[in-house]
Length: 232
Picture 1 (tube, rainbow, N blue to C red):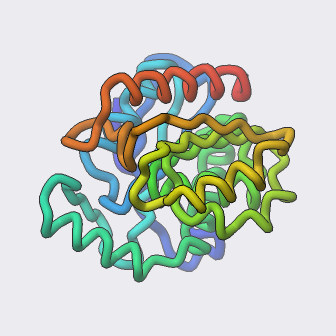
Picture 2 (cartoon, rainbow, N blue to C red; picture 1 turned 135 degrees about the vertical axis):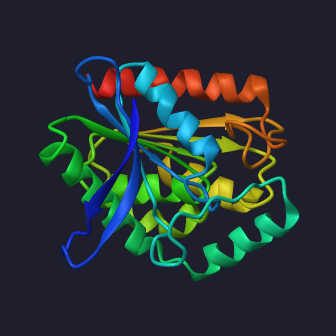
């Protein structure tokens, strides 16, 4: 069962929408699905529906609500891809982490689910890292997160498990950035890194031309096992 809910911001001065997929029975935990730069589109909703099929409450907050509420873009359409890049340039990820924290509060207080994890993609992968460093989320997973190499100074704040999926041919996260991420996080006791040789940004997209089926299945199986362990 799916629905759209309204979540208040941390300061309660505003609110934003979130897509929610509910499991058939009592949720065993909750997973926040953090969007790419393309909004809460069909691919993100499908990921939520999958998590619900595994027994989780899945929530995808509309993080671009201050720029363009209800945004849905297709990465395979050039004009829409370019629009998404423009929105990414305007977006403040510090606001995004606050909205993720508000979503954590909504899940625990309103939905009544204590254990909360997140899975983020692209911009969402960066926000998954930031959530691990800045919130009390129980576990976080980031796919091809951008600019994490510029935020390694926050790694001391990571108190709960974090997994990052890194495609080695990511044209948005180059070899130097990847090397910095490994140098900064390989020895962190709470962090697990997985490299995907020859794969590019977006390889685990739920649909569309960017998806690499074998890579997506491998990464997703690791994610599911990781969250099953740490959200139990």
